[in-house]
Length: 306
Image 1: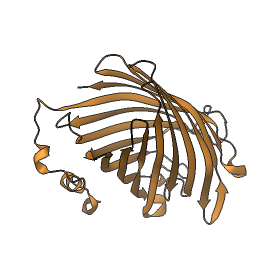
Image 2: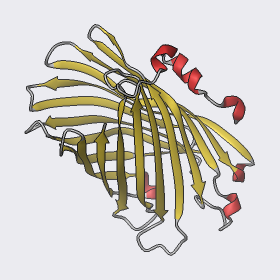
Image 3: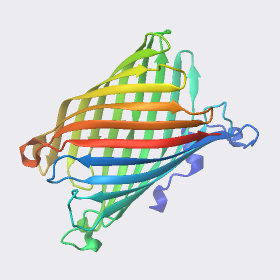
Image 4: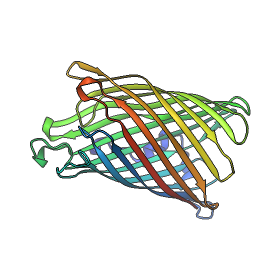
């Protein structure tokens, strides 16, 4: 919708970016490019949706010593209803653009980020085998209110995640649908020394509109152990404990329980090259009607900074 297009100037104004900062000096410019993949494999055969995804992200900074950054991302995700499904593959393309800036006020570091995520559905969620009745596209206007407050060398508070306004084009519904979505996390981190740290956080998810036409709410307590045995290697094992969850459709609600165990790994090959990997297992109970949907998730990437 053209009348709702968010221009770069509007985004810059929202993040309080002075136009003079946008002047590009190639001698000071920097950024990074990351190329990766994601894989999800369900263990249960019924109602499973395995996917494979290839993705690339590009971050550009007019001044690599400053906080202003422009981020671009693209991903192509291909689904199968199950490992043995003979149905035609479903896929979606996702494009993202964000502007981020950083502000320091004493012990508070604020890194607001705002932008757009656009999803183009291909043969996804079709009705009666009719591609014309599948989903068209979706837009998410996202805002990330990220901050870190450092009390001392040991204790800090942080927030991450986003809030979003969503538009979903669905020919089956004869028009657009609009809704609200957020994925937010806030917590505390205790740093023992250079090698060891522990963080505990509360996370809350909400999605009023999606391709399945139901509302979803959920919350977790998240535990992470940050271990850096060397200056080039960082391991972050984690456990996410689901404490509440609900799926609602047409006034009917079902309880949802989701727990997750996994590890994130970062390894600096050189000053400019980093390898990133993640593996986790999720125990997912979508109540009696849908049953368990436990699954493995894997991702990997190579990141080059310049």
